[in-house]
Length: 330
Ligand code: HEM
Image 1: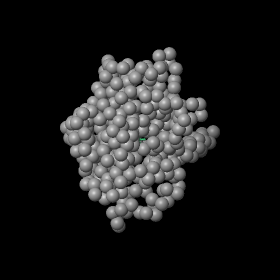
Image 2 (image 1 turned 90 degrees about the vertical axis):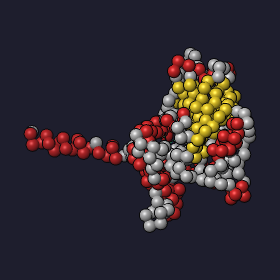
Image 3 (image 1 turned 90 degrees about the horizontal axis):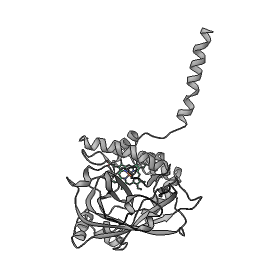
Image 4 (image 1 turned 45 degrees about the horizontal axis):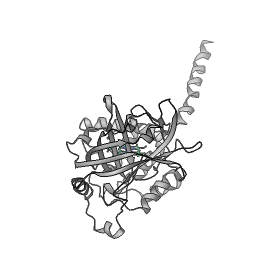
């Protein structure tokens, strides 16, 4: 029997190997390292959305939204906001004309020390249904040592094998970047749960629509645009008075995609105006309030809860890795 017990144990432990290998999800440190190998790492800076601008303002929620969420956001009282506008990617010198996503991150200071984060992009969908696709994109974008540029064949192979990347890539290819951070809609993209007073859950998605109107640069304007106009444009805009966005909330119906940020909901979903964001001042990010914030989208106050969207869930550990590195000077 003694002789038999070892092979049996070995067999049992071997039997667990395929289960581990079948789950290829990369870890957060692996994904952040993959981002660094594409863009490099600027010490003390965010590993993604590195170039950005800090801002402050307030949000006033509407009573109608409080029918769906008991969050203090919708009390009708002004809530102080710290914001950050950014360009996606880890290049601190990225051109403001780049056909990449722009970000708007908001930290709402709720009463009793609660905090709520919304960390959004100016695309209606994301380019990955699963962290693996994001990771594979970083591998495909890794510069070839011979040319210093990504290998076009690897990028082509990535596109062909990851159809979940297509919708966002097409959106970015066909919609030029905005003329100003204040002239763009920002989508929450993921589905979230609004939790009401009696614990009733409503699936929702939201977007922030600019009162200044949507304005994209024409191809000609893009040719003429300098590399860094977004920050000064926002600073000047807020000096003239608050830049405002309405928070439009879509109410989901049974069967709407809940865990996939690459799929839109049908356009006819009921929508309510949940409140207004006013950005009153903007400044360069160095030393300003937004610099030290980790805009982890899973930081939530009572009344709003996450879904099981694997991308939403993965963002939290990935942001923590980037945050820990940058705050320790790496
Ligand atoms: C697998 C998916 C994703 C990964 C691995 C990822 C990774 C990251 C990382 C590492 C940062 C820097 C965090 C920091 O140092 O504070 C970041 C920032 C950011 N991400 Fe993501 N992200 C993902 C998906 C998304 C999605 C779906 C959105 C929008 C819905 C988004 C919007 C943003 C924005 C706006 C910022 C800048 C936040 C700020 O201003 O501090 N990301 N992301």
